[in-house]
Amino acid sequence: MKKTLLKIFCVLVIAFVFFFGTNAVVHTTSKNEFCSVCHEWMKPMVQAYAKDVHGGANKFGVSAQCVDCHLPQDSYVKYVFQKAINGASEISHMVFNDAKDAKWQENRANREKFVYNSGCVKCHTNILELNSTNQNMLDMHKIYIEKNNLKKDSVSCVSCHKTVGHKNLGKVLFEIKNPPVGDWE
Image (cartoon, rainbow, N blue to C red; front, side):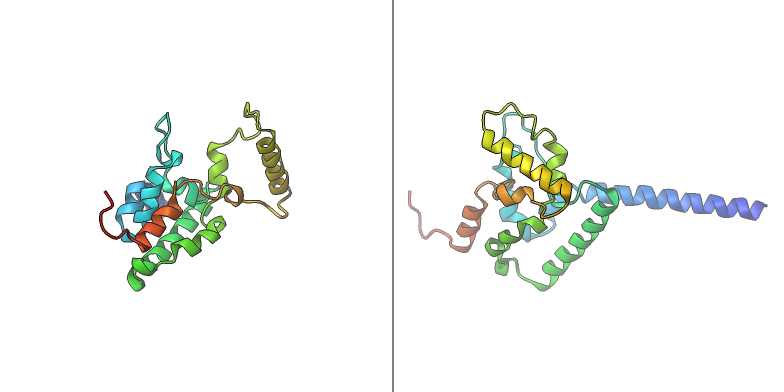
């Protein structure tokens, strides 16, 4: 009986440490500072993000974290799983590739793979309740909801909102690849 209780106690302690240890690691690695300081890859994205309303450049100073948009928000299990995949991918890119060779401009066409609707909807829950005089916007959001509720031919938020999250990212990326010559001032 004592051995059984000891085994149960050990399993509970291990589960407790695993759960809270995992949560601590997930929390620490979910901060913008972690995403941007860890490697050179994200400097252009951070620069453009800081100028965007989602980066805090709005009248309220509210900002989204990188993980709010770039990881699924509808399930903790999906979140942690995708976070692990993204982390392994980023480490692989850092070790085997040079940031200067990244094809960021070309990769922007794949934005639907890197921005999750669940992140958008988590904050923008009232897309149909807006007091807007823009009927076209309301109509498009109704279509989005109808298509995604049917799960057939679903539409991504960034299919329409192509530049969301990183203001003037195209310009920033262009200037990195094509730095200005001389001082124009």
